[in-house]
Amino acid sequence: MICQQFPEFDTGSINALLNGLALVLQVGYILFSRWYFVLIVFGFMVYATTLNDSLAKTLVVFGVFSYILSPFLAEVMDTSVGIEAFLHETSFGAAVLAVSDIEVMSVLLAAAEAVGAICVLSGAVMYLTKPSRELEVRGRSLVVRALVLFVCLSFLSLTFL
Image (cartoon, rainbow, N blue to C red):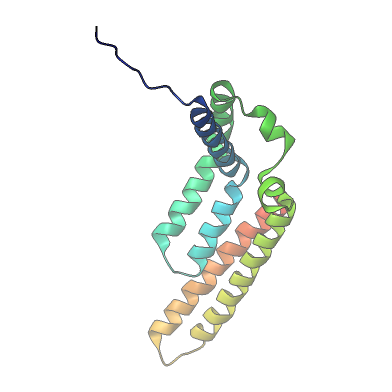
């Protein structure tokens, strides 16, 4: 008679894996739904510095889409994973960074204002360099991009703070 032995499953490691995946989904949802403004502000900061226009547009579009899709995502994740209790008990800033969301927004907006001020100053210096036509055009572009950043920052600071 041949006996077959089946391996025993370790349910502890499976539960640990599922708990880890649930934590990843919870943090991802919080970043996706509540911190969309971080993506938008970083996108406009990259746009103002003229480092990479495609990355800037991607960050802004992803931030806007995450703002639009977050209620739908909340409903789907609440029904499938059941994370509503976690979301209402704490925020990502308080749980992970040990600061409130308002403090994170304030620091981010202050950094973006500093980047905008540097872009305006360097753009003005480049614009006033008359012997070089290329520097004049780049300076004008940098100032205009910084002004777009300041308009978005004023809207975000009035909305969130």
